[in-house]
Length: 241
Image (cartoon, rainbow, N blue to C red; front, side, top):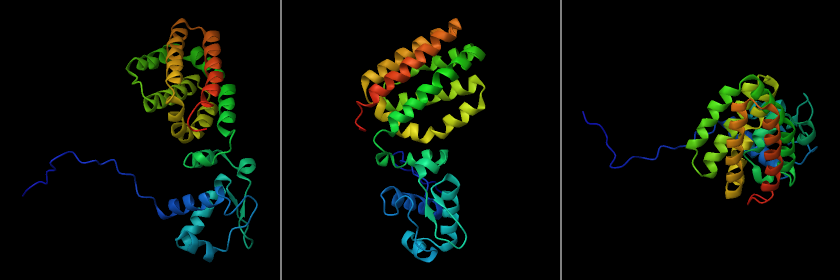
């Protein structure tokens, strides 16, 4: 019995194959975002829409239920399915879905999102320093091994803020931040492509680690507010704009 051996290591970084309902969901959201089916319009009947999306009617029903759950569409038995105004009627799930369509976001959406983070981050940083300063300082030791790449900074920065919410012990902050995860990890590399942005964050990690070691809540809050404000300025310099 022989074992197959490749002359070189194969690239096994395959993407998982989308299930029919996931594929239909992606296609239908694309048609909503590109205004094929604009806000407050009605979707075609079940048979026609299933044919347009290339799925079976049971798969379409599953897809519509998923979209209704997140606030993309409104389903009423016996009536056409309405496309909701997802900016006003959508839920946090909309953010995760939009992370796969970043170039169809409104012009000021990312700065608006950063202003939300500006409002939250100093508060959960305060809680983290108050409740678990040693744990935060230990986490920040990882900054010494941080590679100077956009991708590495994006992941580390996400993990830092996630850790801050966990150490802060307020589950509401954790759930809100988790709602931004996919969107953040898709867009943060654009931000950290800027060398000054990486350098600025590196200094923030150093100063935050010192504030944690000193148990200085006020300094940690002020540092976090400063980096959040500066991030809005840096974002406007990215290639994403």
